[in-house]
Length: 353
Image (cartoon, rainbow, N blue to C red; front, side, top):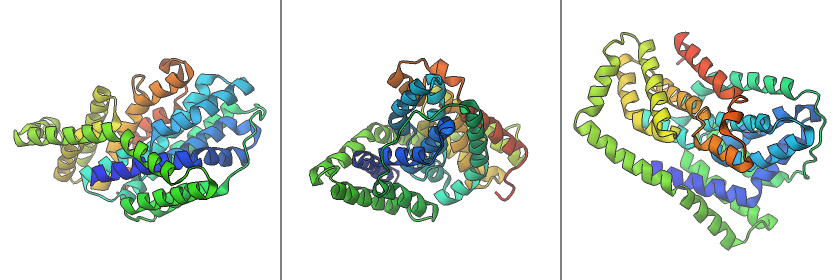
């Protein structure tokens, strides 16, 4: 099921991109914002696009050139605008219903995506608002030097439909299928591609997911061999030997996925690796599975967003010729998210979960 979801997610993301939905969404976000809010506007656009398409790297690829162009025209540092893009991309990577991290986190913990979203949004949304205010202060006084193209409203429809249907709790495979069909219909209607171009886009999107699918299958086989030989039980005993509360269990889950992410530089693989262990820890100490899924996704995204050798920063740096270390100083969202997630564990927030 996970592999099928990856296939559909890749097909939808590439079809929407070929149809022009990314450019249309960027123009929509930029058209409704005044000139002195350009940094915050790019952050908002990155948040919306990433939560709609479910890929932080895809969002960075789409927005990084626009962000650097705005920086050059306004005098803002290129690294600042790239930090804005990466921060917004990690927001959607953490929350999107079609993000591979969300898919893996919920599948390994055995909970619904909509339930995990309800836990995550209570932590991530206030942090995103605070980050947006910081970018407003940083970008204040800058004149509007970017003239967005006319908004093609029809091309935004597939993203909006995917977002609304996913939030309503509709099965993720049906959501993605609807998104693919809508993107294809809009692309054919607007002349963005013909029927063969639509098929080629879906094929390219599926191909781009190939490496992740193969790694997922290999990791699943490796983890089953570890479990069969008692490795997972040994790890759990070591991790929980000094734990006497659900709060300690949550801290161990957070530490485990963060460490795995540092070693793999891939938040999806980190969650896939430690997900079965986290589920057993959660069941033993009475941690709600919706909360354990949220912890896995949040702490992996926090770690991934700050890795100079992670795909996100390497992509942003590669597109612009900057150093990943130069961009890191402007990554306000991942830093604040990590601190807030840690406080959420210590303060038992949100208490409903």
